[in-house]
Length: 449
Image (cartoon, rainbow, N blue to C red):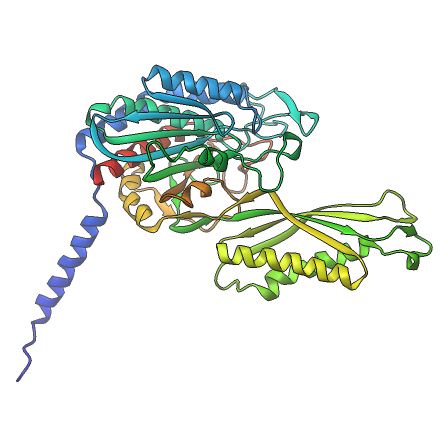
């Protein structure tokens, strides 16, 4: 039997219709024009208060685990909006619960509140002059990573969405998190200890009611102000602190054969660790980094010391690769030390962060909303070797984390100060874009589910 063929023009027309249908589906959201107008108007109208909040937090930064004033200000604001507020979650964490007038799912939005032990050099009129205890020493403190902006943005989102309660289909949980940057050993952090996102999770932040999805953002002055950078799948690296204690045998520097030199052994371990990435891990699958950043041992030129301590970091974008790399680091250090008659003890932590991995379906569904809120200024960005404990939430519920561009006026990629720099600053106009984006993502998710 002869097979009938369709005319070429018909086939091409059918393909074109299919493509158009897919494009239309990918470019639509559940937000109605009235909701879009409300979000646009109210986010623009709160710009002056966003700046006021951000600058207040910037003047009064608090280190990880010390966010008492910030938490109090946040809780007062949430209570004034009529939200159910819980304080003291995972330290100084604050959780606000907004129940919509209509039934539905639960979506969470997260902001981090802590600052860094950095001496501010911005010269801003609202620059920090705060000095706090850090690892037993008085240390200048600065918001050098944008957490002051994150907190102000989420306060704005809480206000905006509380005003839209009558049409809200479900519940929004606002998570204001302490200690994203981690807590130093002097504050009681040990290997396996919990703080930040992990501590809040252990105290039930994703339960009662159970969270179905979570969104978060991070200000980035290296991207054009008001733009958004995202990536489906691994976005930010998992991070593990590496602690290696090398035990040798003390001896006179003139007769090292009477001892076991832990300095020489440590140098061999450092070189050996470099072969893990260059020769042992399959970096065609995902990149990885092993760096040693500190060495401490000895106190005199003619004495072979008893021991040496190494401190480093491991960065990975795949959890199985992360576990494999940790085993290889321990084995390499132990065997090199043993070959020289020394001993090596390897520990990881207390700072440990999983890979920040965006849920593929949630990310895809979020793109139309983000494009609407930014005027189509959304782009895929490369993986970032920095880390984020937002990943702890993503291990348990679908999550989407993105970067909010906030390059200051007059700056370029070559001249802008990066996160954690003493000169760090960002364009405050971007905060309204952050409010619009998180508000719209929450409403769109609840509408679609």
